[in-house]
Image (cartoon, rainbow, N blue to C red; front, side, top):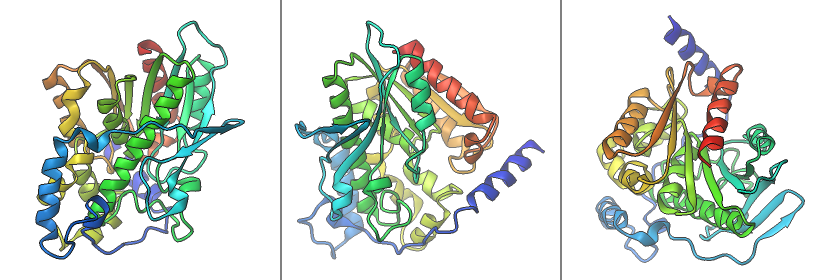
Length: 335
């Protein structure tokens, strides 16, 4: 009865957004390999490219940045990746310095969910600030001020264009690493990362490749991007663009370079909080439990919080308070 109640509520909340667009399937080889022949066996080319990339440390390597600008609480800097959309090539972040500074300066990079508006996670950042942890809220690629006029939603970070999805998620991780480098330059010596939904995936990828990250709070979790897109309620319009052009097995292989699963072992020394919702229709529960099992298999220090709600209802009272409490208490304890 509870499952039926929350699933109905979840579907009603998803239906509020009526601007979801089914975009055509594209291989998008040019986004990850501009020199490749885009017409001859694009599926095979991307499959081989993904296999090589999984063992390539340069895929998530960020170059140094010297062009940070901060005005009041707004930080901007150039992205490490240049896309065809000028707006997307400048990273925007909002800074919430801790109200009470401790001798051990603590900060957390916050990555909101897919399609978060500029106010998303601001309350959480303010709460972190009040408990002595500075927060830097990062706008993901193609979100907020980074969204070109042609878009109403952040479609280009998750879409039926295979190569673009790979490159834009990589861009998000490199942006996050540059943001963390800025925090370190401000003197923070204990830096955590917090991500929700798509932001959770990006947070884990960042934590797996950025040694400055000392704790990771992962809010709504899955080992595979492809499976969430294929099965999730909030990505049904993306699945509609994929149907008939690609199967799940191939999609999973192609999107492995931006999925948490291949990188779990890199988190051995990074404590993590894994949060999932019992009635989630967007991040299927069996996938969340599989990621937890992987953490256990690798012997990675982790805590688990199970919310008694769904994906979208996590943002409603009282569940948002339960979620926020778990996230903030974990960071207070581990940083």
